[in-house]
Image 1 (spheres, rainbow, N blue to C red):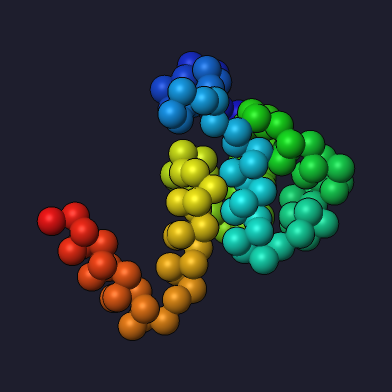
Image 2 (spheres, rainbow, N blue to C red; image 1 turned 45 degrees about the vertical axis):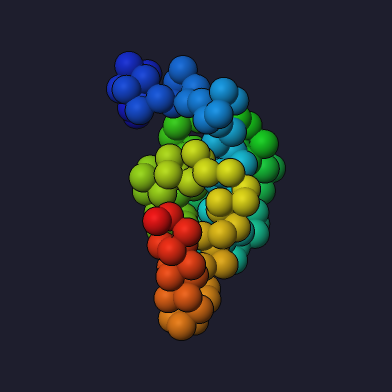
Length: 119
């Protein structure tokens, strides 16, 4: 088990903030699960906990750290995936999801538009 001082260093125990608001790690877990195409029952089966436990983790702003590790393992992910995702808005998450599924030509076009706008 990771101790709380170690977690403070990564902004978990004291609660990370984005745009002045606390980050809701449970919602970030839920979004990662949906991106993986899994439901709560799937995650429960892979972690060995009940579906109710998975639901509690997803509804909690700060789920238990050991539960987060189990959850991410079930998705084949790690903490960097969660902490990166948790700091993105819903719109940013959707943009990344759509971009990752788009054909190569569309992705090149999007990048050209964004690079042109940035200048």
